[in-house]
Image (cartoon, rainbow, N blue to C red; front, side):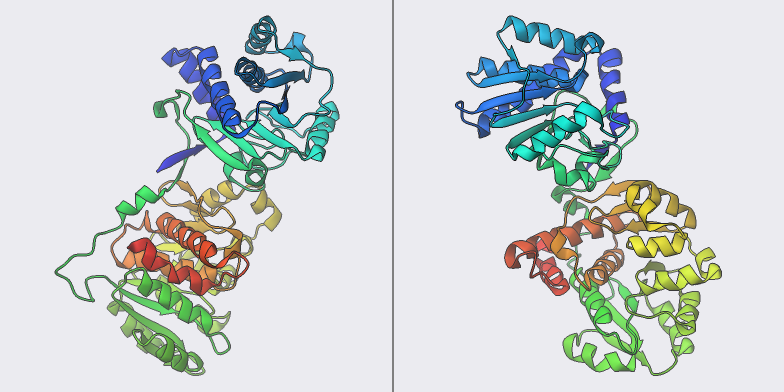
Length: 484
């Protein structure tokens, strides 16, 4: 696991490191600038003409230092300054003084360069880019040359990933200490190009407020399968999914549960789906109904299981609400997806029944319905929406290109790709989370781990098939490789 921080927290950690720990600002700046210069040295020919475009803050000071280091390595590099140097930070003035003494040229034009180093704005940007700054960013983007961004592309909010009017479109971004929210969340992530996180000497103890993301090493947290075991050892999952006209959701979520390692699965679904599941997934038990669910049978099935997954393709109806009422009144671990959430959005009693045993997995539109909140405001602040949705009582998995999970803390997922924007992908995710609960992963870790595994499987499937051709079933097919 590692951290993702806001721009504000990054700035606070810098000050703590300088003022409380005692590492001088210029030392941190030199290490940051050297990281950028080393990347450029690895990628670019010395014959390339380069320019560092710098604002007058500390991000600009980094840019000036990068230019000075590259010049010392034999590169052709100039500096272009945006803003009144009389109003610059002391660090910027000091870097300019050093650069001039070492022969760095300060230019009046950014035209006719091969490589651009973006040091205009840092992580403190809080308002839209306007005036000459906007004009310069437009110019740089129009040249379609190679761009290296220092810490974050200028024009991206480091706190949200929002584009503040206009932003640099970088090919590479070197960020310092920890990744910033704006490096990871969209649309800012698209502007970063390849992201490199560089350690410049800021200790983890400098950070107070941060988000978490999982890495491949965290797969070691998955429960080990006992040698002395039986099918009951690895959990029983009741899946309530599908309806008269929808069959695929029940099949996909059931396959995902089994492929995650659960020992037994029973599917409560409409009669129309029973033959398909029997043929395609004979390992599953079936509890089917015709026009109306048998709630007495459900009363018997709930004590049998360890985990309940409800919602995929179940439809919106009074029958569905009756099922959910019984599910939410149980003491089981519960995963609610898709139509379970759409039914809850229409029924305040069901919404009030959400509790700590429940994990909800809405996409943005479903979250909009449940919270009765405009979807555009959710898009603008996905992290805080997930945090605020925790007040419903349940754990939250807010699905998007960067899924945000809030359990005991906030997790931002960094796996996955746009090929996973395909029908049934959410059913697979819900099944993975339910399966992880069944095999014994904690209620707090199963949601972010499920999201991570789902995205990782999607990345593996995309390499095998391409993003354009990826199907939800392909994600399931890769789970065996991950668990291996």
